[in-house]
Length: 401
Ligand SMILES: [Zn+2]
Image (cartoon, rainbow, N blue to C red; front, side, top):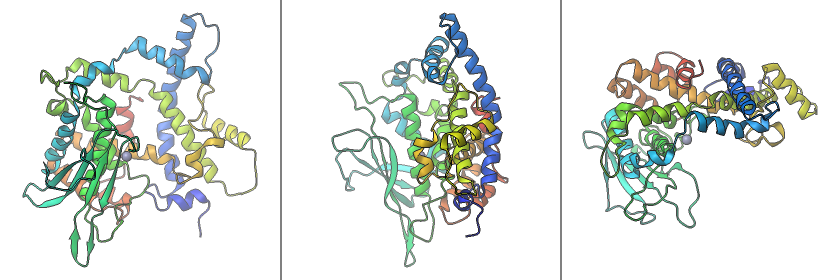
């Protein structure tokens, strides 16, 4: 079909367009990640030495010793954070964010049918009162319900015989139930998840496309609308809006937030290095032009050696059990990283205005979301940002400098 290799074929439909572009992005993050990872390895070795371990750090020691270093350095108690993140408050926070950005409103509709008594239906409307769509939210585990958190739709937006069909979406999750007189409380991670899935819903709600299925967007773009929402979750201006103690109404203290932010980037060199190593491995396999059988271990060794991976870290997946690379994420593992570059770069656009809720930036972002998969994602991103995405915002956010 005219492509040099499988990677070229797969990426042609993605935002990255070519394996060369994906490599270029990965390499920009690889160097700073590896540098931080080397420092982390030294910290772990120091911990081993301080305990008179008498051995050199190996890959299988990493997680054990990094937990020890984390406890010694940060001592982050997630339980102490939870009272500031009552589920109801976090949900209202997500709605408030969409309200501040886009002027839209969410009204619970008890008159609408629900698929389970625990699901809540919200009507989403423009500031003018015009109907946008319906969003169901279903938060707690119960027998027979799948685990995890996700967003999907009951009815996609499309135009049927000239008539605009409004979207009906749902956010499903499995947060702990209220217990006695304590409401359902979320960990900071769970709060982030709520905003993430809500971001997917916002993407679907803003869809304005001709054809059914236009919500299916490129693999390296699909997490942008969701991940971008995570950027607001722990910003002080945002926390003031929603992170209030369920008993006293007190806003989460700055000291706790700072602790949380610092701990969030702990071990980041390791996390990025193992993820990027797996992305390189996936792409190295899928840009082969010769289909002759080969020794997977030898190939892997040569591939990772070329990138300079340190012996204390292994790629997140080895070739022989790298399910992503053999399935729908073949030549696509890089897209997790690509999406993170996009969400940080997009959030930076708000920051640059000096207003995290800047209406003009939000309007441009909404326009991008309205296009679904109907246009080239690289082109619609360029229209929003005025340029191609850059890695700097992500490097800054993750402390990889
Ligand atoms: Zn997602």
